[in-house]
Length: 208
Image 1 (cartoon, rainbow, N blue to C red):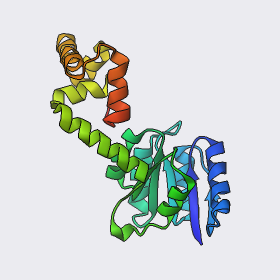
Image 2 (image 1 turned 120 degrees about the vertical axis):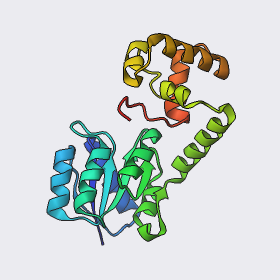
Image 3 (image 1 turned 45 degrees about the vertical axis):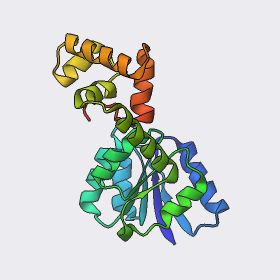
Image 4 (image 1 turned 30 degrees about the horizontal axis):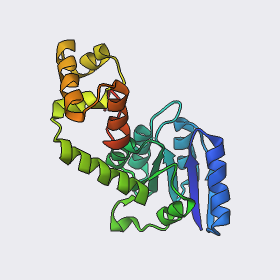
């Protein structure tokens, strides 16, 4: 039997996981369903599970920090990062997650994750792999400069905040956006933000 902790701030999702485990006939015991980072770390210390399924954005901590903290104490724990935003996958893996899945993944994909042998490397859900492949194609197609990628990542923010975050002048930020509009054939700022976060999978956090 695999002993699992599901860390997510939406109790309904954790409940759905339990139902899926039962429907799939998995030999899984859900030990706890914490909804905050602090409670997650405490639950892992208390129960010492075989698997942690970790949401990447809780109310008090982000998933990267939680994974880093837990990995320090439990190097052998199987950790799967879970998010509605594919852009968070790289940060989760860098923090020490063994794999990544999306909240929109089919229940059988979660079954695959639980059965993964971590000695074989990193596990990534097929849907996330497809999104990563698409992002790679876009990056090759448009050959973005690093400055363009930096600005694209923050395209959802006002120019003043982008300039401050990247230590640039507002004029430079406007010039980069002009180049991006021309390169991508759009004049809509929201299109750039959507491309950055949902297709190129750039982390939207200013601190990334």
